[in-house]
Amino acid sequence: MEIAERKLPSLATALPGPKAREIVERDRKSVSPSYTRDYPLVAKTGRGAIVEDVDGNTFLDFAAGIAVVATGHCHPRVVAAIQKQASELIHMSSTDFYYPGMVELAERLAAIAAGKGAKRVYYGNSGTEATEAAMKLARYHTRRDKFIAFHGCFHGRTMGALSLTASKAVQRKRFGPLLAGVFHAPYPDTYRGAYGVRPEHAAADALAFIESELFKRIVDPEDVAAIFIEPIQGEGGYVVAPPEFLQALERLCRKYGILLVVDEVQSGMGRTGKWWASEHAGIEPDMICTAKGIASGLPLGAVIAKAEVMDWQPGSHASTFGANPVAVAASLATLDLLEHSLIENAARMGEFLFARMSGWPERHKIVGDVRGKGLMIGVEFVRDQKTKQRAPELRNRVIDAAFRRGLLVLGAGENSMRLAPPLVIDEEQADFAVRTLDACIGEIEKSL
Ligand SMILES: Cc1ncc(COP(=O)(O)O)c(C=O)c1O
Image 1 (cartoon, rainbow, N blue to C red):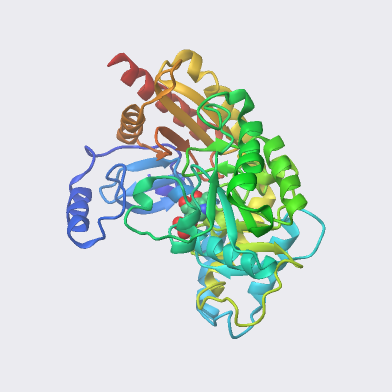
Image 2 (image 1 turned 60 degrees about the vertical axis):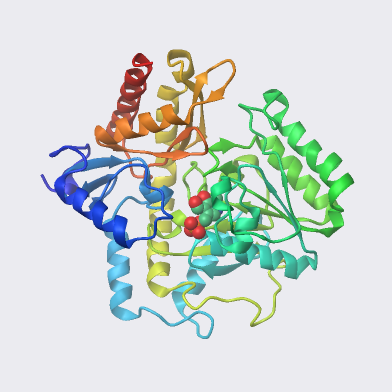
């Protein structure tokens, strides 16, 4: 069967197959050892939500290249847009010249950002570049130099972004000194609580820490340029900030003239059933950082800022490849597809999945929490539901078992699993994923 006709996985060899094993071995000798690979998938082709490996095994992809291929693998409309643009103009450099696609995309991104006011768009090639640009713009515009971010957050790995990132110590180990003047507050985790206690007060406790601890003892709010927040923490474990927290944070920022930057690199571009996860809270951030799903797999990142905030002068910031014409063409085609039906599908499929999964903590003693929005769903694994002792080893076993049944999922945070499929999945595929995970969890539970 052609891959384009497949909806569900089919395994032809033991995993990894012989060709995959050979590539993994060569990779081990030639590619940077800094990458983490949960399991030995060696991909060859992809269509929609299906990936075929080098041995002819096909998998259902609920990872989407870390939430990147929003429109599925190689959507024909995206491929056609890329091919057309590649045959007309591959590179021009937005720092020196103009081209129409770059302007059109900026107009469209501005139109989908929250709030009626004018917006302007800066382009880079990745999420971390979007973070860097937002940090620099925040300093430039406010003439303040301090930042606040949250425990568990991930904003990228370049030096500025890494100074915000507080996800895993290994990401920072031996890379210091990082940027001075970055302070971290507890994230409002409604399962564990901001401090690992009082989950029902998570939002109030996280906010109180900023106002009563940080601003009173450590940093004057008038020195703070920006607060960076993921409305749903991605790498941190798909932890959802309550809407009232984001609303309160917005009020806090307004009170002290601090810029509110939402990092929607993972949560944006329709994945949660709206363009932006922050839209669910009805807030109007000063800047939105976006990347990943924006161009269905081509490298592109952007900062969408209120026009009055994006006031830096020519020469102050730029990137040779930012807004590369081919990536921009892929992005325009992506926006069309998201707008046409895929955001709606993400909301619908998210509800379908959630309805089937939300009861897991009652049925599975190793599942502590199921949470998320749209097609951004996290499952947290615990040793004990009462003590909430984290169980990374059980999470890893579930992910590996799913792979061996043809389902690709990724870990997130210390002990969570994330479901981040392409936005094109249908009910049959969602059903397969739930049934497979249910079976894997049940099997592992039985073995304990
Ligand atoms: C929320 C968030 N911000 C920033 C980044 C960094 O993006 P990139 O890997 O494209 O630099 C990521 C990547 O996972 C992310 O999830």
